[in-house]
Length: 139
Image (cartoon, rainbow, N blue to C red; front, side, top):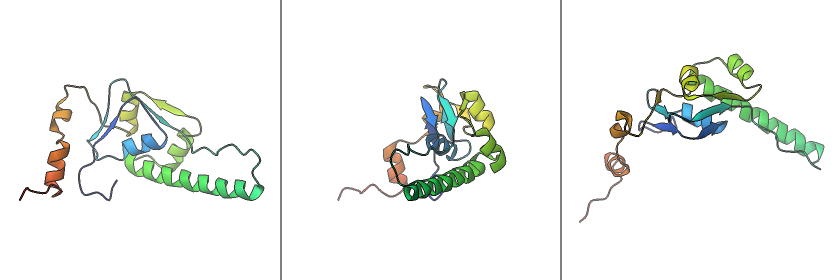
């Protein structure tokens, strides 16, 4: 999302778990919102059940999971301002956060209500398209 030139607004509704929580945190600072009763949760990437997989397959999946964890930690470190060691410690077990906890942790910036000014400030999809030059004018 950081490669996009436009401002990125993120809104957490319901439960933002794992990578969804990371995406919520990756919006532009000041533009990361959560609804009043939403929850954010960080956890480590999970390895799927091993079943009857061969040892080679397990090794491949384990390496991939570790790579995903490293990338998740790097992104969260950039978006929340926390060091990787703290994030890794916090993610040893699922870390559930209320809206206020998520704001304090750096996942979100503000609580957004239905009648909030923040909602009114967001351009409509058509306005975004027009500002980006994506709307074709009638001939």
